[in-house]
Length: 331
Ligand SMILES: Cc1cc2nc3c(=O)[nH]c(=O)nc-3n(C[C@H](O)[C@H](O)[C@H](O)COP(=O)(O)OP(=O)(O)OC[C@H]3O[C@@H](n4cnc5c(N)ncnc54)[C@H](O)[C@@H]3O)c2cc1C
Image 1 (tube, rainbow, N blue to C red):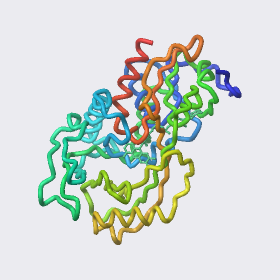
Image 2: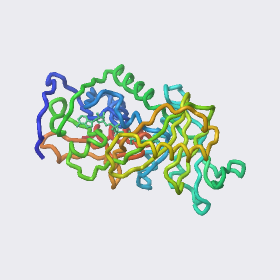
Image 3: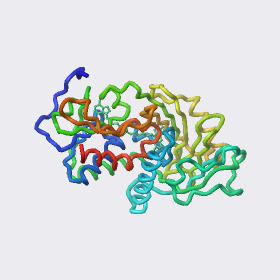
Image 4: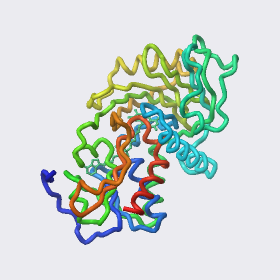
């Protein structure tokens, strides 16, 4: 495939690896590469923090991904890393109680259960209106704007380099490095010619925190996606999962419906002042995240793909970064 239009990169900048993308996937991968001793340049087409990653509700939970062993390992590695970071006091990362409600006929152990220490069935006194069944566990929760800032600082402090450039094709990144990591989220598809990349729009409501500590989620709410994720000063209320919808404008009727569903689940939200209506596009790949060494896309420069994490980019981030760095070390 030919690049549509070339950019004028600063050719003088050279690194062992160039990572295209400065969202949660690009930054975690770039940090793991630095830890392996590589020099790393991150290229992004937007000012950081990356929009999609900063909008994420960012609770550890495998959403809309293949239910298999590979995903469980990536999710499990990420859980362990985020739990360690929460214990170390990394800004924006906490480990807090979460109740996940399921419909009464669906009481099977979740497929990802082995990734989560201490998962247990809900007790009778944890039922919530019609929601009587489900699971309790501690979930890492990330305040993304705060955490992404910390990741950028960690990357730059460790010697990483950052450029803002829009690329039209991955081949344009070869001027900076003999090895390219494609971590461009929704943009990755056009950069490498993957037509399956699809947006899944998510709309949220942020409200002031009236004193909540426990995350609540209803897996199969008949009226739509429903979750309540308290952070330090605010609460993330969700949400939507609008397949193939590109617009970024918050829809007022959707916002009212989210508030109504969440308030029914947690009445203390009734008077919480609304702070904002974030909207983002999940980078969905129907066959699952692409994490592989691709020696064929470009004639002389190997590419490691790490994109297409859909609604689970935070949940899989560190696990995928570990794998991508291992692939880069042997590419
Ligand atoms: C409403 C909502 C709620 C969510 N909640 C959760 C959750 O609770 N848990 C969870 O795990 N996940 C959640 N997600 C999903 C998560 O946000 C994504 O999976 C994750 O942010 C994807 O990260 P990324 O780094 O791949 O992409 P992005 O954050 O989109 O980053 C892509 C990067 O690539 C760069 N780029 C793209 N194209 C180009 C180009 N042509 N040239 C140069 N640079 C380029 C961009 O500048 C950007 O820096 C949620 C998403 C949304 C929208």
